[in-house]
Image (cartoon, rainbow, N blue to C red; front, side):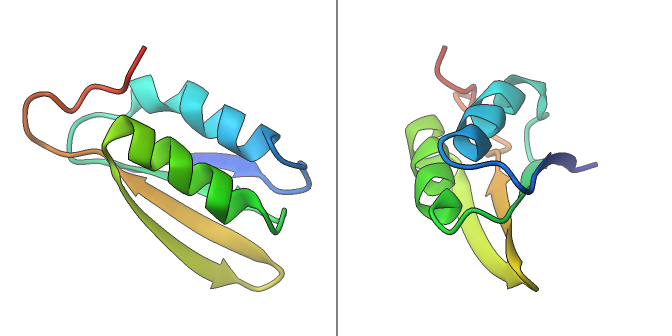
Length: 81
């Protein structure tokens, strides 16, 4: 089951901060979905995904963004501490 972080209405860097805090709770192979309206959120959240070694996809969703970070299912996929 995907974990959803609702960061709509929050200015950067808060969507990225909320995403980073949610990473440890996402099981291997699952996704973290960040809903955001800040235009810079895709850039910042993509950096969070890259730092953690997770895949990233951004999808425009009306007036905001649906940002999906997927945790690898293999070993060594724990987020950095």
